[in-house]
Length: 414
Image (tube, rainbow, N blue to C red; front, side, top):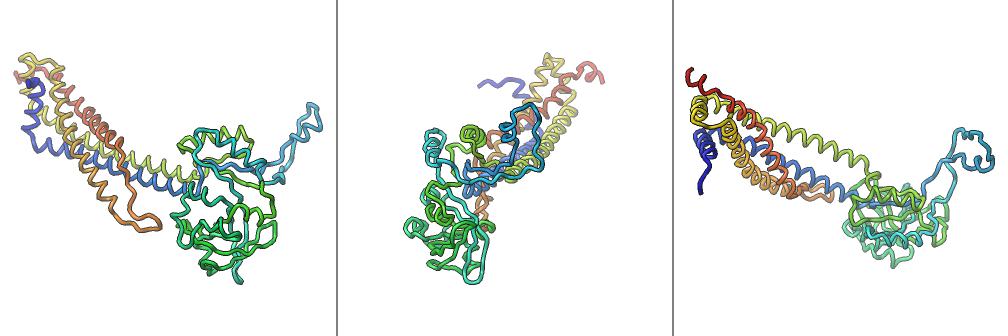
């Protein structure tokens, strides 16, 4: 295969300065490998924490939010043009129940974006065991649907969560509750809500989420048992939880549901604002570090090509004197930069992959996190090569432009 003369000259220059070429390529390699490694670490940890948040948080939660009193009653009663003012408005006392919840659920199931839906009854309660009392929250659920949505089984320490459907007064409690009240399987616990009479329940299981606040307060009961605990009828539902086929669509879908239903629809982004803020901060830090690494690699290439031009100034003059155009000279030195970038990119891809693989084997053993979460995401490798090549082209263009302006007459005479 015939090689273009510009390419042949570029390769000759690189081969003549093997040490400098290798150093420049190592700079690019380091930048790309760190880019891949840090992107893999960030995406891996982000995916892990998102998964953890979804173990307790639905993509969308629909509930009846307490509202602040407004002036609409006065405007109805006093239909004049005067301005109505309400001083020091308070929350309006209202039921937390969703009206016709099962009809709403049937309507929501018609949406092709919906993956799962489950009703829930939430109650603030006091747990009592012996002389010890704890404040907490009871969640009345269909435990099979709850497991399908949040993988309850993976958090079980003792017992079988299916017993919530088999034992009429069964309760599934967090590990913190069990420890503080010294409870074991089949022990009794007294649960008292703000409304309704105290109920004695039997512990059918113990779970742990590794989130202390949750484990110290949360318990599951059958949805009918929660309604009995509050002294409510079978249509009493406080929450409807949904998961979508694509959780990224949750924010716009939640706004749509608020308009349709008139209830508050809280998406997972709203429920985890601090987590999303942490993701953005990590992304800024990561991109800043990687940008500095690639910038340093670019300066290394720039300096090496500048030195090459200084040392080869007479040869460049001869090339131009024998008919090489300025564009040909730019091509020669720009190709050198591209070849350095390609060498660094190939090595960087390999180093980045094996570094990520090695770190993914590091055992953490904290909570339910066994190994350091790493992501092997193909676009990160493509982006890494792209950034590396662009950096080397940018670094090589200016020395190449400088070389193209060499005046052969002045250099040869000098």
